[in-house]
Image 1 (cartoon, rainbow, N blue to C red):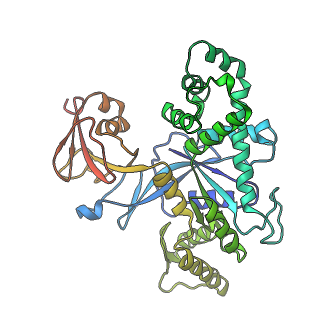
Image 2 (cartoon, rainbow, N blue to C red):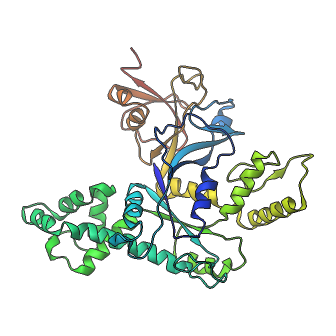
Image 3 (cartoon, helix red, strand yellow):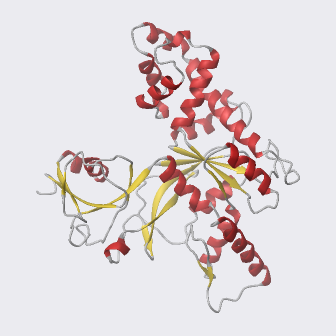
Length: 399
């Protein structure tokens, strides 16, 4: 799973990236082999099942603090966007290639309206965050149009050779993760299912690309700089027009994480409050800064950063969390680690899908699974639920 972080200059995208990847606890052994400069690790936050079972867990690739489990996911800081990006202007090609890899996108905007369309500072409230969203969406849509048009002759040849429209478009858009089911859904909505591609109008091509983008690259809008006083009118207008809008203040999240590292406060990402540690000596400036953060959290419930990451994972991508164990009586792996892993799987994943996610050989030799709570034996096609604790039994594990 890869989350893409997009946005124009000076909206706080880099600060959001830093805030979401700056861990307040040391988590080692990430299950990712390579982390590039613009690729980081953030975490989704869940309530761990350790409290239900009354055990002290010791995860391998994630961490559990007081019953809160943080599961690592990758996040990519996508190159900035300029007008004409779909034509290769600026870092347009890199932006669109990075965005292509992402499963979901977090679009960071300046909800305070303190930057213009080029990202230059302006009087707060005079910038237009709605225009920022429209601009990015249009560039993405036009890029998809250019992908299709770039190979128009070949597509028309396929179209004429007996391939149906779905097969033609699936071949051209395979690199974007567009499934046949997604194509079918969009073509049906636009009444293009039975229309040969070579007969599509310019508007039909654009409408198709726009709908595909919305389907395969779902977006949560991070309404950043929501701590600035000019936010409220823009936020109200934005939430009326768009779904999945979360007010946030990534600078305030950064402040909290630094305060944790300095030993000043008790705080976990996503908490709805923080506590200043006893006998902590703070300067007047530090007290004032923490008071600003406290007031923001009281108003919005959190700084918004963790909430946005969780929404991308669980609402947009509809992931579930499953805890595999090898010893169902001790809830451990073969090394004795209690509840060692928490896997993020697609909704509707099966017991066999879990086996393959753990190890390909485990999936190939799958015999059955066991629901640890009920001790019931589960077949390969059993649909898993969120927070399931599962033991996989395979031919390889019995050797």
